[in-house]
Image 1 (cartoon, helix red, strand yellow):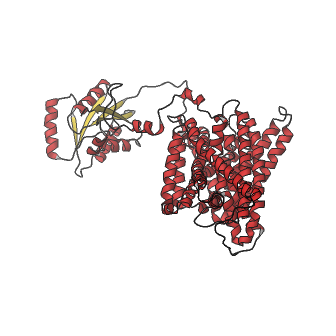
Image 2: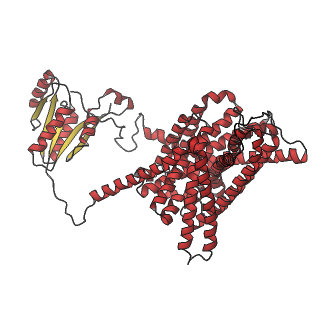
Image 3: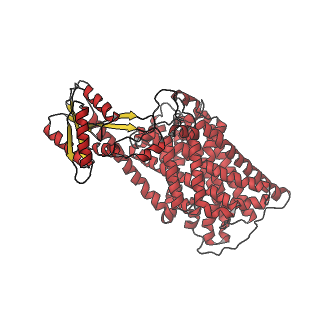
Length: 630
């Protein structure tokens, strides 16, 4: 019978005694940085400039594809229908300003963070809060997928030869953004500031140059290709609403500031309010500017190049500024995913503390970020990129459904909040009206998005949200049942237990000697058991056992089918029936190798046995490790 051992990472004999061996902790430190103390968390905050870069990258970057998504729907009614792009764009800007004004009130009312989950839970009830949480969670995941895919589209527009590697580029980008976020909030803020502000500068140059050529030089930008798109359906209200709902992807990420109030320096509410308004103004200017210039240039969507890339070529031609625009667009779209990387882990940690998600999501990682949420977000977004083949057009129909549901619940939750606090807030009625208007607008938009995108893929999100709510409730029920079963009265005495120790014997060696020595020190009944799969070896072992004489008889169990675990489990069950002990203890002699490749040279019997014994009631497993030097 082969030895039983644990394949764990090597342990240091003495502090400071480093071994020349593979250590996963060293690799982890190299990738995400040195662990940080908990008290350093107060320093992991963002200045307004960095917060604007981190929290506005999602909505600001959506200007790279928002106009194009509107045009793609309108083209179904032919090229003439593109004239509706401007009024739809202006209506989206109006919605941006309404939502931003409403959310500015949230950051003052909830200085500790006022995401939709918190606001809806406290003011509308737990079910509304779970719906808001599920809606936000789906939107954050889609934010990562859409932003990364759109960023890759910007690269492949400038370098078409890379288009065949779209999915691979998406997955690589997700890995990079995930690793950056695992390094911590402040470090991520520094890294993400450069691409965000570079993209803002590129758009400012683009819009100013475009209007200068048009209004001053009298040479408005012109599309390189003018294609006439025939109509496949008429211009209907439903079509215009579909175009509007696609363009509403621009608003995703506006809630990020209210979710991340605690990421700001004091005074947190004042600083968060400033960033919220600045973000809304930038988003409005860029949206209107791009829409107006695209209409003047006669630009329409084409398969091989994005609308923003076409606009860049028409204004900058193919010079350095054009490539600066494309590179910064790609980078900011990759960074736009960072909004979700900031908010999804924070949301999941709050829900985990409330018992609606696994408690691991509430744990802070080495770099004072909720690393479990960050990793899970990256994995799910990567799977979406694979499933939808890295296509923005396929992902967009799923997008923005969740965010507008959460917007609506948040705003109506704030109406209830102001009414409850009417005695302490003299302007409660005005504040209620502002939030009621915001909630009504976003509620209408949510209905429009769900109805116009339902058959295109939104049905998946519509079904997923209630399904997630059921999952959240099931997790909470489990935690409640576990807590009830584990509850103990403080007056309840701790009574002594009796138990027998069973030691599986593979061979006589130092590992076994250490285990028997430890077992005998506990002053209980000890049984040594050998499972015989080789008669000659067993006979030799019996002779050597008698010579060694550890003071404990050796029980031999024949195993004609060469199984090690099943005969031992039957023996344990037999002992449980024979003895009147409260429990049985299985003590496993194990040696621990000290190099990673040594793990491949030894079997996993102990691991298998521990796994099987884990599910036996009244059975305790004790590992007695013996660390090898060689």
